Length: 309
Image (cartoon, rainbow, N blue to C red):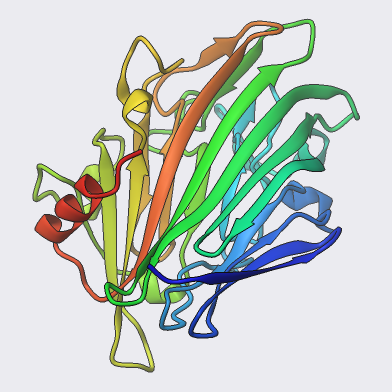
């Protein structure tokens, strides 16, 4: 496994560089200037070890899409996603009074080893009027940097606690009436190179559009880049407990688009709302594998089996 170098620009970002000199991750936590885009930390750019950028930033179709970020599109009448809000019977409307934010508070733990970065971050979810609705404990880890395989791994976990006196109700555009648009939760936006990417899951040969709203332990995307003779593969992986009814607060389904707006979200409220009572918490753990080359199903499966949680 390869070594990494970490640079923390305090108040701004954390950048991770592989031994070959490629900056593979930049996690930006400074407050975003655009309130309407829902201020919150995000990871961009994310790159393969060979330097292929695999995240998009403020694309013209959705300016609030920023790399990899935690979102909540419908949360007790507020929008922690950014941009226009979907209203049943009226469609998407610019409602700036609904836009919430996720405030970075501190990094209580920040551990750098030769081959691993492990960060704990505390954040506060703030509704548009300034009330603090939730406390989030976020854990990020960069590890398994393997220059021979051309891959590395980002783990991203969340534990969210309701700090308001009323329940928090989590939903999505689909729970508000828009069919098959259940985006919410941890969300990835890809660059234009991923338009038309090939998507696959462990046990199905369905096309990307057929995977919308489905469930599986992992989902992979492969694409061929413009300008260079190269492919990249991303694998989005649930921790085992995410898919167990007794440990997950609510079932998760994939939100995926692989055409003009390449996106994947681990949606935690695709078809139905769920509530988080006052003082209660829920948690999810996720893993994203970032790899050079066009990996196939068998290779993805074998790799994930070799990488225990």
